[in-house]
Length: 324
Picture (cartoon, rainbow, N blue to C red):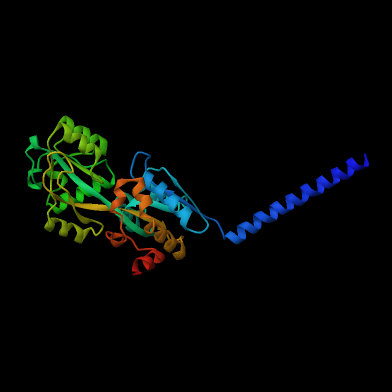
């Protein structure tokens, strides 16, 4: 009986010692490993481009930034991500550079609701404004658009602002056309059914909806020539020039001049310059991981990371891009 009591006492002491050691060990590990950096990344819908790239970015940060605990979440994309950053619910957002510009300057959908403290980490890849029609409409240039039914994007969307600004550069106002406020999917269907004549689509190419349209109709992409693009960029600095390569879509046999906005990574001034530097360094040192997540990532390069940068850069990111 005595022996049993001694064993029980010994086990109790051992358990208490283990508990204390466990608690102490945890504290020691946390202090020696540095403070945890929780990094919430706002992306877009699960079927879009932002979501897989956000997952890849989280993976890169977890493996290459000391103390990082990064995760990506599905959101309503650019405009929603600005608001999530404003509310402090996320730390990084995938956002079109034009939407970032609108937010910082309090214009368009952010009129009287400016979000002044946004900072850029990098611009990633172009989201091209594709101006699509079909051969049977007879429309070949912007001059042919007047009087036609034009899908300009959903009301209050980034695409709608793109359409309005590009038409303005071509000397066309909404009074000159029959405006149709249609979302991306609605516009593609309406073109297919002949219910609109022209549609503005802001997306990376090739775009599945346009590819689908091109299997049933001979599509025509209206070019934004160099002079028109220069005028547009002078007034709206977030645009960049791009060419949609020949054969991107069936029966489009020549390159088409276009303009694009850029997908960019946005943070707020709450992110330290040191962490900003570490994030972009990790990203551009591990682009293969991004390319494995989505084909569009082949367009992400350090050399183009400031093209179309529409808001002030995080100083840590700026330091990285200035390094040779």
